[in-house]
Length: 150
Image 1: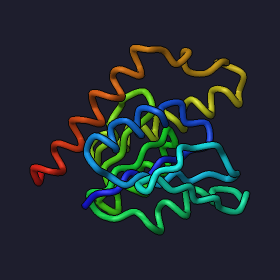
Image 2: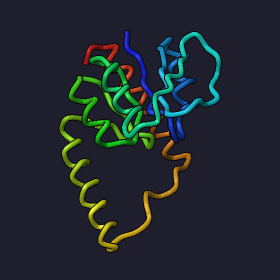
Image 3: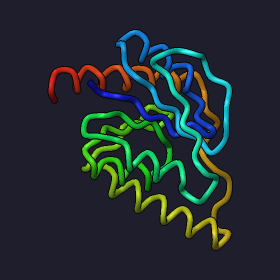
């Protein structure tokens, strides 16, 4: 049985995860640095971790198992979870794989360097309904693939 771990601090798709998890009968573990309001359901738990650097990330990596699903936009966390055999999906519906994570890490590092130099500014475009729709589609596809054993 697969579980869904959500890097919950600032996650814009928690409601979507709840709906999909309930439909498939999956357990959801929200991992955050502080308490947050969430539906009281037997399949949904909130794990509050110490507010230390990467505390939530470390907890997720320690507990995630092969074929579990991790929802995060944190690329280094995605990389660590992939190494444990988990499936990883970003908030905007971008799935991370062993084939794509290297490019994502390199791009992240390059953009960080360019921002530090003052060459580029700003961040990603605003989160919109298209991102929400893409996320739902990809999450459903990942769950189906895991259930079929792929």
